[in-house]
Image (cartoon, rainbow, N blue to C red; front, top):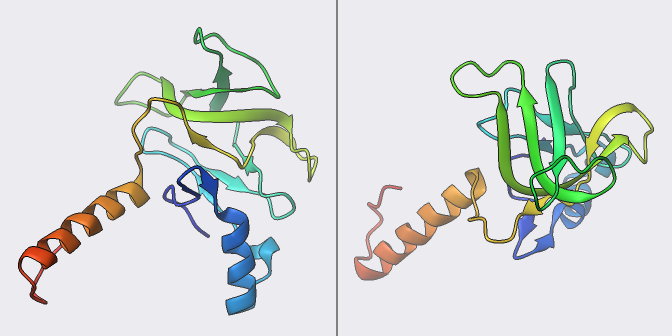
Length: 158
């Protein structure tokens, strides 16, 4: 399983390439390479189906939406800003508008399971800063490399 916002690199989705390389290198079939979509504001996670790698969202306590440019619900099969109602959130309001652009389907177009699914091509909305675990790690590595160039030692902590 993977997660942490690593799936996009400079507007290029690397999930397909990554799954193919995992299969070639480690012998793990693409179908067994799963990804997770989540954020700290969500009390759940969308997990990809093995057939099509769409993110399946549990919907018993979590209601996902796609919002248009006017922040109105846009319905299914259209691109827009990801938002959600989270019935488990207790320390903040239960309605969140994220910085991600998504497309949501009523059923998975590949495995045909019912329930909301997100298209695997999730990206940051225009004008939103890049966030997530992968970006935090990248920034930390850039700072460390810069420090090493100024003061080359092996005793550098992240």
